[in-house]
Length: 324
Image (cartoon, rainbow, N blue to C red; front, side, top):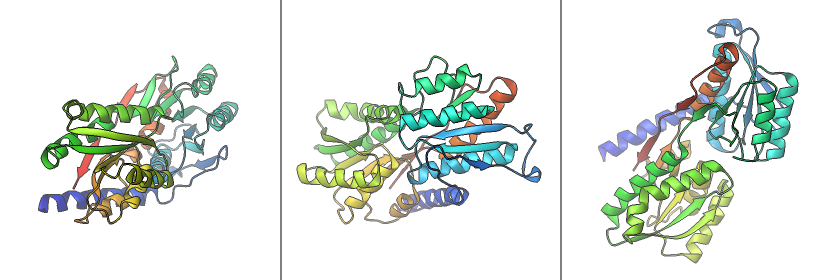
């Protein structure tokens, strides 16, 4: 119990600190650019009035707010102008955002591609315009993609799957039925689900774990609705895995007061850390990235490529699994 208490206190302290960093982050409508610049006294070394464009998939949830905060902090530290736009999950808007940065002749772009294939054309247009692009969080299937900052999304899912394997062996030796909240719209969602299944594959093969359903859900409302439908259609479900932060928020909300069902999934939030302090919480495990670090490093590496022509080609930010 003491170990659990200390662990969750550490989680809460970490997330509150990140939230404090991200509290001033603005979310922007598609194609509307916000600018972050630092005064000379806040920077390490001026980067010759450089400008970096940052293209974000969307601005839902705490995760992206922390990414934005990291990007803004990098801009202040490095003395560069960072312009941040949201594509609101629309590849057409993403293309417009990229074209706007190309027209502005920014020095570099940090892009979180929406689609592995659908984002390639916009990515390549920037490359053809001699603007270096650092991909962050997600990638696309461009032959010109060289730089990436983020995590191994398959490993992100797998780590939760490995924890679930241990949890099931200890608590459900006779077998358990589980449901998944997934996304086939994004490569990150597909990879996380594949990794999660890999982590539990041995128990699937032995018949200890049975996946009764997989339901698409991205945002909190969708996660809540999907979980309600799971409970109605598959009342024997005892464990739910969620591929992202916002769908997991919906699952946790839907299961309020239902101690017999546990939730595991991806990406810590303040509400999750608080929930894990409660002895009857439905939230059992969260494998999380470090979004602030991802945002910060994406801008830092974009600046480095623009200045020197090179940077670390792949930066994988460490993962952490927090459990009850």
